[in-house]
Image (cartoon, rainbow, N blue to C red; front, side):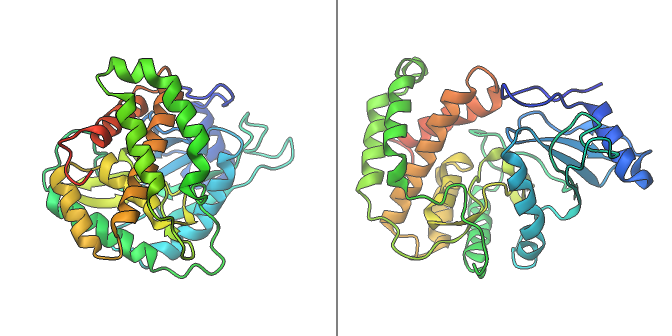
Length: 317
């Protein structure tokens, strides 16, 4: 029986048997479908394949449940305007009173959801894309469409604060990583220089636009080297559009970055690009600090991003 490896100290035990009980209690028509773990690298949700065309997502911690509710409310609307598939929510089960079937009497305290399964491969940071230029254009088209969605009633993104608000924390994390990062051959003084440049860039003055908020390898799918789906919208909401430029360093090599920025057009000016580098940096150093002992996938991705950001040969930053 597959059990979700724990990443945080305060998450409940989640395994295939729990998922079977939850599904059987609330959705008897699906009770006989096979259940199996669908990847173990997610940090906010445990995911279990249900049959061949569904996936059950279970928040790992309190706080992640609100993101689940937001996804369930907004993904249907966003799916109508984005040029690539996004997860289609099929059902959501809210916690009930003790003793009710399925919640929390089954030993799981948070709301959980069932989504339509999307086929595709998860890219690996640092592994070359088969079609880098086309991938960059695909991502630019998706972000352009997302930025154009009406924000009336939209929530603020988890990353909706100005980049400068993360200054003290980011510098403290860089200082704490100095030995760890330097051991991987990366100069933490160079990291600080990238961060300083990002903070010197003109801040975003316009209203927040729709962002995904977390465009990194675990949250997109590819087929034939092309972007085939965008998933895990838990950080979505309104923010500075520079937040989504983290994709340039988390998902792309130099060729894809060049294509990506060119396809985004003049609205993505130098200041926005620098802020995007800053967002990639602050996310990556925090992920390396937090996950280096508990989640090798996340830590390895963060190390790759840090190297991309500080490499003198990395095209377009």
